[in-house]
Length: 399
Length: 213
Ligand SMILES: Nc1ncnc2c1ncn2[C@@H]1O[C@H](COP(=O)(O)OP(=O)(O)OP(=O)(O)O)[C@@H](O)[C@H]1O
Ligand SMILES: [Mg+2]
Image 1 (tube, each protein chain N blue to C red):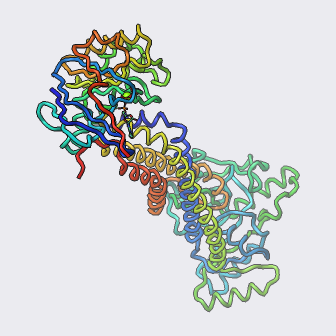
Image 2 (cartoon, chains in turn orange, yellow; image 1 turned 180 degrees about the vertical axis):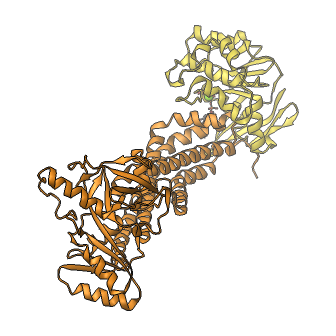
Image 3 (tube, rainbow over the protein chains, first blue to last red; image 1 turned 60 degrees about the vertical axis):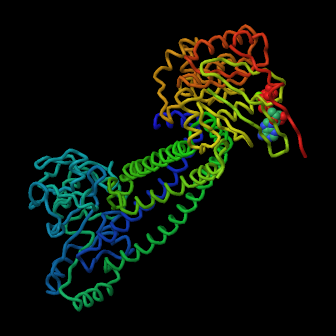
């Protein structure tokens, strides 16, 4: 039966390919939209930090949040490292973690900080960095470039990669972070001092190429931001107000900023879902047209098989089986291609600080597939059912 | 043995055909001759169970098959009757072999297909699409599909109608040689083929048409 069904399908392969393509496109788009938007918002929510105050140079709040939490975008500029000491001296903070960025290793940002930034990020191998020129790397950095504990890596100037290499001063990998499914997987962490050392060397050796990417925390004693965990809400308010009054500085609550970003994501999500609905309707249309085109042939084939003596029930089974095969194959292909695309675009999105997991299939994706399957097999099912009610052969006893 | 009793067919448009009682002995071959429109195809359709007579009985081995429900008639047709249609009724886009395998959908054993195609001289065509075959070749495919089940009854509606006399008589001979004890009822226009059959029936005498308003 299945073999015959497949051979029979081969006679309509162009139409079937078109049907399948239509299903794959609509289901694929829907899956991709749902999966990416969900992972993006989850990533943003996951980025909500243990810090309640981030202080950086004056500029855009979103840029400061994205830069310090997802290591994307450019740092706003530099602030003096002494700010960290100042904050600690107030006695109002539990933690004040320096943050600087400006160099890269291939396409991974190099973050200058203290081990405190990695407090809740366990190491999979090795140890935390202690001295300058030591580094802890994210798991994807390790796997992408085949780095192990004890290896050395040469960073380069600028965030885009391709800048001048700090060839004379390689960093040594002391540890590798366990997977976090966040921007931490793709970054290199090292003490702030490493960055100061690298750049002071260079200034001795060679002329600095013209600064193309704005200010970097390269000078000794300069960093890009401070991540702060206040002792109490009162302390937070006091510090926040204090730093907000300084025109050269920007003080933000990262979670407030993230919530705003998330609202934008939610809006674009709605738009994407509306588009998905349109695509799905078009899919239904294409499939209905094809089913209608098949109607004439199908009628002749049914009459033919009935005359030979194949029962109406068997003929229905044959068509429904074919329909199910096409539907299932197309739906499977959709799932596969959506996640393949996800895997391919992972690299781009990673640049935005969100680490997509191509293997993550949400429960709702199965629901989407079930809906697409139902929608795309429905027209043919209905047609088959309605045709089966008109038996072209009337040789039996009347009721 | 097939017997008809008081058989008549009345179509919705008022055309009616009344048949004299007929008897077809098991294992013998019958030629139905008669003018176009006299009711030959209609008779075969009623025997095959694709058309229900308005009146009368069709007894196959003593059982009135007209009383059978559709499912049983379908089952009998695909397992016991080889019907060769006037216009072949083949799936044009599928191969010769696939066209024979259609009957496997209802559990007919087609393992003898290669040997049968060999005897009909079309073994080499078995992977060809029916669409690309000549009329005579298609006719043989239709015969192969009818005979693959080793049927008790073979109904052939003008199996040589599209062929010239030489090819037609060769095809008819192949059909007669491969009956294997089945009863053959074959419609033909060509009375030169009549001597090959055990019995010739003149349908002009047997079927009486009538048109009522
Ligand atoms: N479905 C139908 N509705 C009305 N009249 C019909 C129908 N089928 C057949 N007839 C009529 O019944 C008569 C016998 O038709 P049938 O097809 O049995 O003829 P035939 O002997 O096979 O002719 P031919 O040699 O041309 O094939 C014809 O007058 C035909 O017009
Ligand atoms: Mg006829």
